[in-house]
Image 1: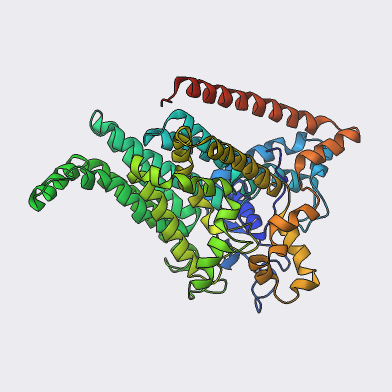
Image 2: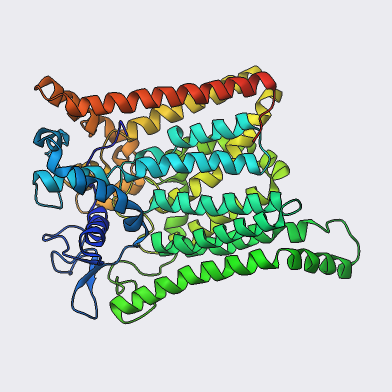
Length: 506
């Protein structure tokens, strides 16, 4: 929260914000749109980005509405507090940025509060990651360190600044994985509770497609994860008939939970199709009408999202890169969870790479792979558990790497990728090929270029307001800092106790 910009940074965010506002203010999904050119492809009229005309003649955003639903409490809070908030507080946001709404105190305050949604979502994702790793068998110490590394050493931190769908996608998919892991652990002792966990997983998977339709790609991975014990149980038996007999028995025992999960997931998908039919007259039409993306050969996206200076997953999630050294150990310790992580990453990578918008617009790093990052952190947890058996040099290098990861992503979290892309647009070195430069040129990557930008942080604006005689917002950030210090102290104490005990617990 202390590195949040306090504003809507992308036109995508503004469309989702308008949908949130319409839900709270009017109980509708219809929006006004952005009245000037923003992200329209060449040939599209100005002011048409992010929405399509529905069957009733009104405008509807073509982004998933899951984030708008999750953000409604934040918007309601902003609306309730707007009449009481000092005007000066709304001036803490940097005003030299491109904006998508008319600047006005009430609108600025609404945008400021709603833009903080992913600060809470990302924190919840880190907590869910810790819980997932604990349930699949990692020690409390390893799980906690993986949660800390995810929150501070990957693109999760910079993306917490945005109102894009990726952070919420990560949280919802991880929530489904946690519920499945709990179902596995509870199946023998509490079958009723295990069934309930599977229902929760199905509901989360069904909601995930409302956050972003791309999350549908994760469904086969989650289904295989839920069914894993059926194949693992009879391992080593010689008779194929006995194998299938054991699988069928296991399937019968979990039938109630699996059927319920499938029905809830199907309900979520059905509601998405119904909503698209209700708005656009076609259940398979998202509202993009083919104007913004198309299928293409995947070769460029495949290598760029792994190796390109501006898009590489491993550059913009360095803590996950450290975890690659623990991947083999993770496969031994938690094979089902590790294969879930790998399959979810690979399938998402393949599908995204086959789209012409594989890079995710003016996003930071591999935008569409951000929801897979918490799953990949399972390698980091395994590496933590392997460290005591490594040499002193390896241990020191690992912790130096983690510190460097936090320094890198912390720096990325204080600047605006949108501002950097505007700077590239005006740079003669990238004339006519701005996107290509941002993907493939080292000098044009955020890692190299962000240092030339001013920090875009609401907390610094609060400091300037305090110097001008308006300390109220700074008091709020001081409270946030105290809460953060107290929470960090509790995490540090838990890590120390786990270190002394030599093992963690759930």
